[in-house]
Amino acid sequence: MIEEHASGLWEERWHPLREEWVIIAAHRQERPWIGAITDMENKPLPAFMPDCYLCPGNIRSSGARNPFYTGTYVFDNDHPCVGLDAPAELEKALPPYRNRRAAGIARVICYSPRHNLTLAEMSQSEISNVIQVWRQQTRDLGRHPEVEHVLIFENKGEVVGVSNPHPHGQIYAANFVFKTIETEWEALKRYLKQTGKNLFGEIIVAEKKDGRRILFEDEHTIVFVPYFARYAYEVYVAPKRRVSFCYQLKDKEVDSLAAALKDITVRFDNLWNMSFPYVMPLHQAPANSEDDPFFHFYIVFHPPLRRPNLIKYLAGPEIGGGNFLSDTSPEEKAAELRGVSSRHFRDKSGIT
Image 1 (tube, helix red, strand yellow):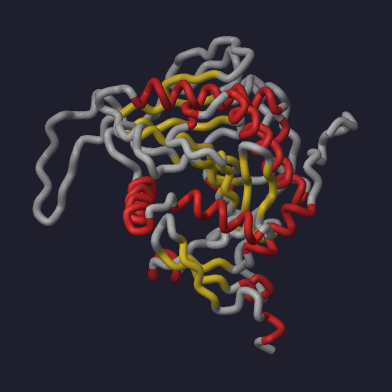
Image 2 (cartoon, rainbow, N blue to C red):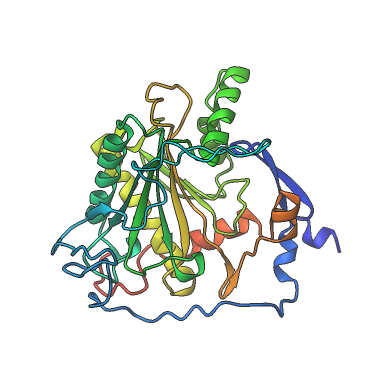
């Protein structure tokens, strides 16, 4: 019986960027499930919603009115998690507790004026425009004297808690470095000191040598399900040339990155002919580390689904034990994504 399920049975894989072990137990994917499932209705959305606070010309919750924008639109978040007017003096916490000021700038990026146009259904040139906004915002906000780190991300889909279905991302430019980046930054520094090599560069080398988990590759960009994937369809999108920030990419690398993002988001949607949910953060170095020799900018997709209507719930091992348990095999999930078309299931143009 054990021989039948040898792949992914009771294996731990080292996640070098988080410096932690991931439990791979792919045989659990087939275990009986009579628990909660999620309604993943794939209802088509209109191009404009009169009550959407992100559509052009509409009034937001703050009372501000959006301009009749025609491309990518950025505005200061009406409900920010950090602010430049954060109080300088706070009530002192009792030991062993500590507190500090949460200062910064929070913004929203509307990808398109169309309410129903996700990255997967945008053209490559439209995605390139979004990346150009990421570059400009990263550079501009990173220069602010109170900003230590610029986190850009997208929450897509109701199952990840998105507050508005209009395709958009967010920016948190904060006076602190977010924990995941801080952990990763230290791991990268430590690896360089111990081996003289760049850790993320070594990850790319290993993935290319193995080959089974690569989903897209051209001269400038590579896309893969990492060996140590925690979520079923977790995907890394990375430039091959090491840069610390997206604004350091050359124009041809931006176009390549746009092609890669188009390819993988289409494959996600084509898995089950639905708009696929995910959390997509950009991993960039702390704002004051432009010349560091070790941080490698990349983008991660963390999709919550492991089967249609079935979410990867974080429970005992992850929340209580602190170790991530993956119920799927990275190699099998990569094969699924490789096996679907790179032409969107809604595309009737005949042009790939």
